[in-house]
Image (cartoon, rainbow, N blue to C red; front, top):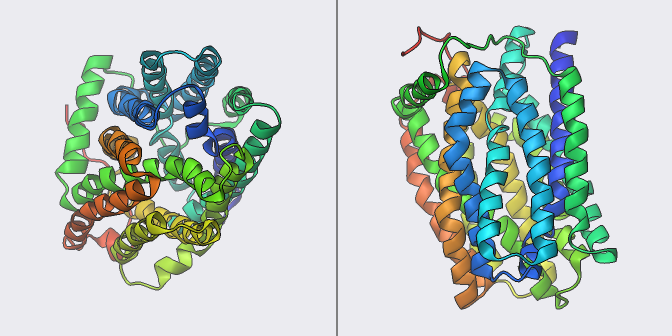
Length: 422
């Protein structure tokens, strides 16, 4: 590995470290935070659904920023937007605001995250190509999982402990402060390499171009299309399960005020993520095709959610949670590499953002539905239902596999971009 590609990876990993640390301060206590503000299970997960709706609404417009202004600009806008909206979230909790305000601010939180989705990953892949990196993408994404897993462990444990010794609002203030630091860091060190922003088109034309390219390089390419269409089921259930596990584990533990235990749930998942990131390249080497890994992990993940939902012993639930987190994490870098290798460089951020948009759509509809199931039948029943819903995405992955794209077996990078569509 040459020094230029090593520097690119170092910047990417530091950005991941900071982003995940900031986010994970609240991951272990977010659902408890919403319930403490006076929301029901349905309202809490509906607020999360409005967050993902914001991601759906703003995914394409912010994708225009990444492709026409620059990946760095998109990242900077994301950090400052998330910092401001996190402070607003804290104020809503402090005021015990009615649900309508939670819905509005949750949409704005989604706006902040859409500036990140696709842009940072596209920045990494383009910069690695520019610096003549010859290694595998699975290895880089695997290192990213390890770094973000360590940050998630530290942040979630710290957030849970601090919430228990102070209150549920303090971790949100900490998150906003770290995001401001990240803005300054990225402004200094992040540079768009291997990508030249196209500022020739106006916002409306650029948006039409992004939509057209999402269709042309996403939905019109069968192998890519089926992977993208599987995203709503895995992402929607994943969003719900992650946040439902906080009150569910406290219920099994027997102490609803033990916020540090809720932080432990996120910490356990972070350790599983580290293991998954380390083993992802080896796991990829065990199978001739990438889709074998992704499909197998999706099936096993759904089965583990069903087992977790039927559990009634805290210790057993933790073991199953570790296995679920490991499977989910190990498949992530393989799916990322598979999708990236099928997308031309110029359209990479666009199609990755579209993939994120489709995943967010699952969160919009699945989270409140499973939240209502939790109100009616308990968290265990909702997790069982979530596992069944996740299985719906498997046939789409099988359809992608049947296309026998070179990226599935050989890891061949996508060809250079053809001329613009518009």
